[in-house]
Amino acid sequence: MKLVNNWGSKMLGKVYLVGSGPGSKGLLTQRARAVIDDADVVLFDQLPGEDILASLPARAEKIDCGKYGGKHTLEQDEIEALVVDRAKEGKTVVRLKGGDPFLFGRGGEELETVQKAGIEVEMVPGISSALAVPASVGIPLTHRKYASQVTILTGNEDPTKPEPALDWKLLAQSRGTIVILMGVANLEKIAKVLIKNGKSQATPVAIIERGLRKDRRVTTGSLDTIAGAAKKAGVKPPAVIVIGDVVKLYNPENPDLIPVE
Image (cartoon, rainbow, N blue to C red; front, top):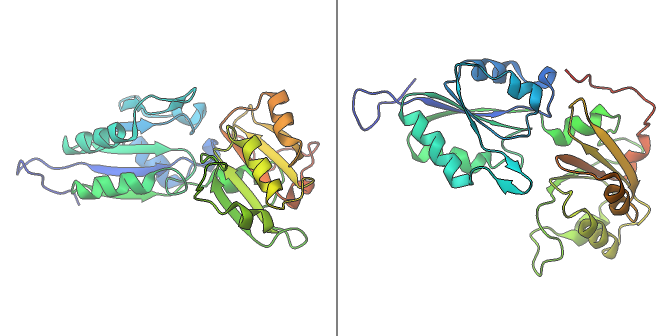
């Protein structure tokens, strides 16, 4: 049910915080498809991928909020202000994000802002790239032989700063799988700090670029070689980094296990 705003008779719109999944239209949820198709305004970043972005409704206002070459098209506070402003105009607003909005997608911040503005909001979860992207190339995050736990972390933080938010010693000692999102820029530092804290330098690593897009690519190595391999291959974000013995199960000769649609 829509809410009445400060102008009395005019109705507020509704905001949907939508996860588009790992880049394949086939893994876009039915709920996400329905709210996107009904949107008056779509604020999107670059992570959903070209196929999903090309399917946005022609009648909708489309606002690019992506980050390109390390530079933001719009800052976070500007994005949140636009979401609120368009909803106050009575429009149905979709904030479209890659993966899932609540997993390193700043969806929590946007939810707080919209709620504080008194606007109705609905969360539409997406299939996280942290899960789907490794699966698509045959890397299970858990396996009875190799790993019984998974840790998902952001690679945005510099692990060499004086007081890192992450406990790298604990991570290095873990026998489970480590999945890193947004870690390409800090890959070399991350590998070095894990080795310094006791992780075996022979630990297998895989980098899967571009999710479930048609130009997806996988680069493999060990903790002591992966930074060099990534540099040689010209690895660029977006990419999911998987660290752990489950990477041994990756076979480049296998076909894609999740079709790219």
